Amino acid sequence: MLQLPILKFNPEWVIERLQLKHFHKAEECVRTILQLDEQRREIISSLETTRSELNKVSKMIGQFLAA
Image (cartoon, rainbow, N blue to C red):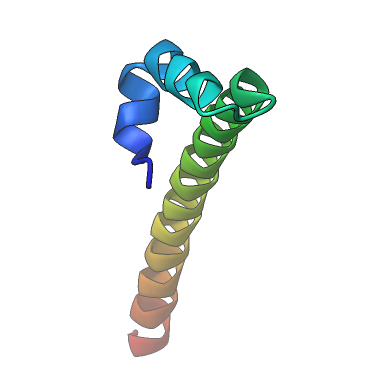
């Protein structure tokens, strides 16, 4: 099974190897995987930012109710 770091480090090599195994649309598949990984990373970053903001607001609410 291919590992994502290998795809990211050397996508051209992966494409060549897949084509040797007669994998059709190898380049398209590798590019799509890399694009989806980038989208996944952006979503995770956004989620972490939102969680951080939620934690700040929750803490402020707790302080307000304690006062």
